[in-house]
Length: 199
Image (cartoon, rainbow, N blue to C red; front, side, top):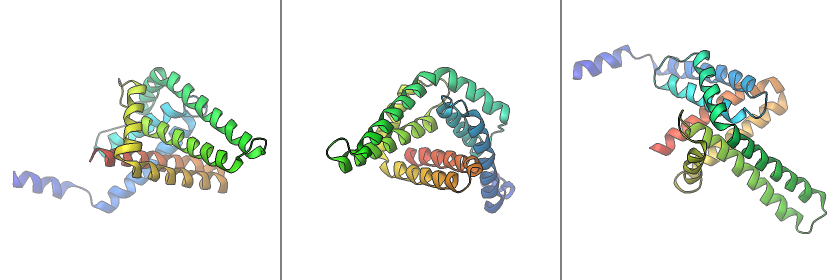
């Protein structure tokens, strides 16, 4: 047993190349996710397929763009209703934020704070759901698990994802093409948060 362990350790690449390979895989995954999310309604399924691709890469499994496309088809077929509901919730909260900022209603600052917090919560819930979801699992079941983790067992992971969203926003604001690698980094962050929650 010791010999087998030593042999595996000897054949394992050094940590530096492993980290660089993961970084490169995140960048490539970001390009795939952004292209697959162009129809907008497919954003969550594309993110789920990207997270699944990165999980396979981390587990040492072979994963190609064909596997990503197969995962995207499966996630879109089973999750378009959930994705539409998620977008509707975001649109409603964005409308609330616009009304709160217009000054028409009293208590504007409080309404703005509630709307921003609601937007962040819904976005993080969607990302955590996509990262958690496995093929064959119902999206609502994954969403319930994500909500439980995000609020009770691992709120720190939700804060990490909010930080990842901030990086994505800054990258897109500085130069729009940077949104692709930043999206890949966000998918890597979501996978790390999901694994962190299981520990």
